[in-house]
Image (tube, rainbow, N blue to C red; front, side, top):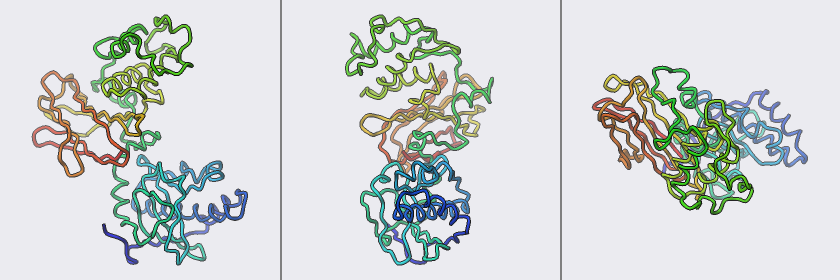
Length: 385
């Protein structure tokens, strides 16, 4: 590990505007001690924001918790949202400090931690370095990693950020993607799952009971989901573009998605849910990107979907679709790769595949690559959970 030296720090001037923002937020606090902490937190975040903007790394300062009155009142936060990547914690120290304090409430939900030294006049901030994670309240600044690691991480596609509804612009919802590309894009408009057309609630129950025979789907179901009308599963429900879908049926699908231990079941139920209600919050971490490549005359798109699991890991689904043909070109390859480039999953299109897919589970913090290719044409995208 390459630790920092004095020459690797980055100094950023702190203008009057930054100090005025910090003073405004500090005056909202209930005690002088909290006010001083919020003042330094706000300066540190603005310093890091300036540095990242200099590198053309997109940020969203106003979406950060530190910019929200209620959050900075109750929590010791100093986060900066990197667009489509996640929240970066920016912690302040004063000149001469060698230890940086990281409060336990920010040990989770961050893509990393940056330490910023604020000088005595509060007119300069010195960025000392980066850590990808922390497990202790005190950090020795001599043990910080190079800022190059932060820059590298900022260019990864963060699937954890997707679970917090943060995306970069090139990743669109399926509906946005289809609307802009019709009639060329080959996503199917017919609502089918497992070969069955979802034209009534009875079909949905039929699929559920394939996975949960003898009503075993009811096991562990919270009592609030068990009103009397579920004794007759054939509710009056029309599943089409303009229907009002039973909220109870949606709640049961969400519960089963979150609790099942079988990955095939999880993804089938998720596909039912996003077919019935694409914008349901339980399945919105699903995006599509035009890969911008022609493979044997066929343009293709990559869809990535993420589902959180009860064991605090995530389930990942990768799919490649044709955009201007019915089928993918024969021999098209989709692969999931470790960081070193070694494949852990691969699939290849046959002559009649309208999509190919891979499914796997991963832990938060893990990195992987997705490779799509045919013959000499290859494109790779880099992800982090």
